Image 1 (cartoon, rainbow, N blue to C red):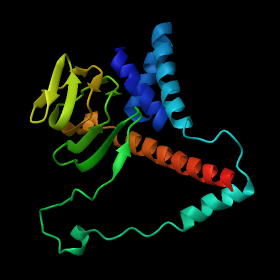
Image 2: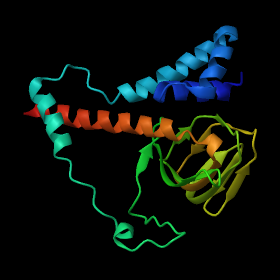
Image 3: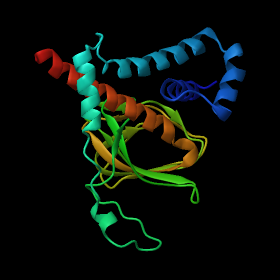
Image 4: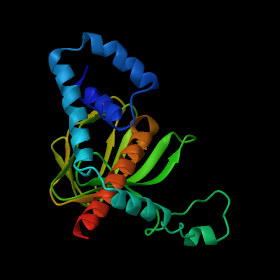
Length: 224
């Protein structure tokens, strides 16, 4: 199995668990996988676990800290109605302002996305990718076509450096080696749904936020 596909399966396993076609593919591959392939799978799942666990407290919370966590959840303010929601719906149109939407953390440090749309009818997902200076994305395989338009900063891939205004299209079956940004970037991505692990991204983001919140509560609790 290709290295990129092993990493994809490992990330899915580490974030939401393998299921369906991915699980069937894994069960066929694992018994015949080489030692190096198994090692890569384990190293990747361990890496995702380390990123996640680095946000988690190492000590058992006291009853007081547990109470603070539960209170902070209970006191969470209700979601404010956006300007778009206040306005009358326009049939056939959807709007998302710059101040709206939710940024979701990706498993690699310093990378996140904001989903703009996800359509079964068109078979595509559209999102903004944001990368901090010096950040990377893991290699991945394109089951369907993918396009990227750099809005600002730099995005390096396949020996090319893309800057604001530059466009890239990857055909189905191609592989993205490590994507790197030296100065940081923001790019518009339009990709086939087969390429978009939406549930895995949301699962990881929830864990990331939960551990970040717990870390904040522990730090506050330890200072009391």
